[in-house]
Amino acid sequence: MPRFNACQKNSANVLLFRVNQYVIDWTNILEDPIFQLIFPQPDMLEQGDFDRMADTGRAIWRTMRM
Image (cartoon, rainbow, N blue to C red; front, top):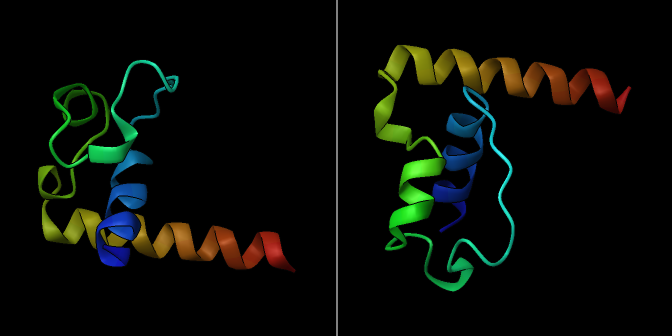
């Protein structure tokens, strides 16, 4: 599951949304239809685009930690 979470976070940076705990079944996000609609899924990006987003996220994280 850790890889899924990293992929999910990276993909979600493309288009950000806010939701609350009542809209999504957070105990079963892989099967929750609202989660699937609201949060961009890793396979929605081509691999090159996904890799660029991941690189950008890591660069931002390194900058923030300095």
